[in-house]
Amino acid sequence: MEIIVLPDADAAGRHAAGIIARTIAARPRPVVGVATGSSPLATYRELAALVARGLDVSRTTAFALDEYVGLGPEHPQSYHAVVDREVTRRLGLDPGRVHVPDGSARDLEAACAAYEQAITAAGGVDIQLLGVGANGHIGFNEPGSSLGSATRVKTLAPGTRRDNARFFGGDPEAVPVHCLTQGIGTILRARRLVLVATGAAKAQAVATLAEGPLGAYCPATALQLHPEATVVVDEEAAAQLA
Ligand code: F6R
Image 1 (tube, rainbow, N blue to C red):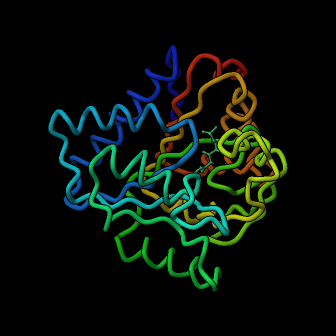
Image 2 (image 1 turned 180 degrees about the horizontal axis):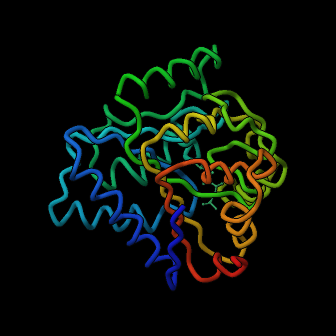
Image 3 (image 1 turned 45 degrees about the vertical axis):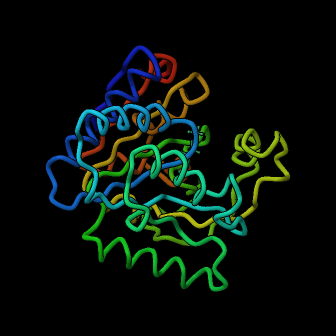
């Protein structure tokens, strides 16, 4: 695992965007895994700047990590809507090439299986952008998730619902209880992983994912298994690294 410590969130975003841009430029049909939440926003901003300067994303396919169960694409906080706003429009991706798990499917298990098949059919993910929860989750694989898991329905931890309440008018009860998320096994199949973490609230998760024993208690420790994992952090998030 490569750990890169930079002064602030903007610098971290610039660095992560550079890695992703190089992958996009190097592949004839790039497949990028995208995350939602606050951590990747600086990366998307920088990627948009690179697109404005000529980075060709016309053949880029994107797969989101997760989606809330029960929020349709018309809900502004559904990850369909967030990915559309923050990624598809900002970067000018072809909306037909952007995929988000279907959290309003009648048959959620079938939707999860279809999502895994779609990733495989696209040739697998070339580069996966990740954030990390304060409790060490990646995607919405909460502590206790199997390190070999595939896309499936999960229950959000109460702490994650509290953390994400800021997107739902401050009310944790308004945050859906269930989600669909790529599994840890799915994430580990991406050819390259780039995790961005900034701010003091992530310091413990960063120290554990890099230095803690590997285990389901902290799903992000699974990055230790990946041969091409880069963790880009600001100084606050790096504060508890040995
Ligand atoms: C979202 C996701 C989550 C977030 C994590 C950190 O698609 O996969 O794992 O990356 O909850 O969220 P922020 O960046 O908002 O602190």
